[in-house]
Length: 245
Image 1 (tube, rainbow, N blue to C red):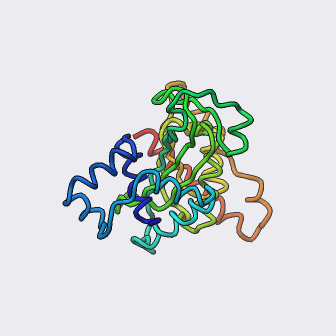
Image 2: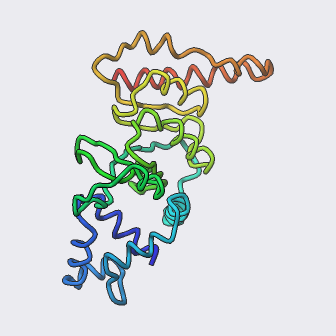
Image 3: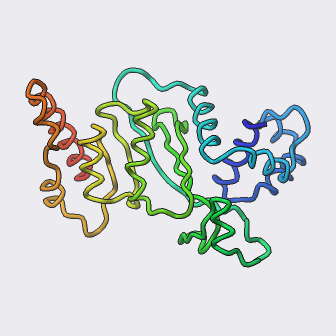
């Protein structure tokens, strides 16, 4: 039931359609049911909603991430490329246009949010990380409300590091929403990856180069100082090269 629910929810997000519509199409189309690997009856939209409501957002994320990692393990050798993107997820909580007070939403861990593609909505921000070569999602994170992408950069990277998805020298691609000079520095110095964040119009290459300086911890271990500097310079050069191209 969990795997089927994830399939339906992901399909709804990807095509920007309702869960109800997907359920109706599954009931109507035998080939679609076969593609979804549904052998028994199609669960209703309310049934899916009630099933998922049993889990906290943190538990749901852990379950999804474990399932994703068993689909196809990441290759063990060589540098890899990952693509990160976020999308607002409207819970359709306000269908009847009934006024929802902040105190009510706080009890349910929800917030009023705004996105240019949705307008005002009640829901979450879902961040998906995809491994470029296989085009498979390897992680999903959920944040309540509509936090700016640049503010959750460190949270995303920490999650990927703790779960040992990323390695030294990997290339991580972000869109302009994550743009921040400090995020370039954090990606290289803290996570030792190439953070290819697409720059905005006011981007200045010289300012970035001035920002990218050795972090203080490089100088703490004298034995590894040279090696750490070499790695930092290598990642910095690759980032500058990617941005210029």
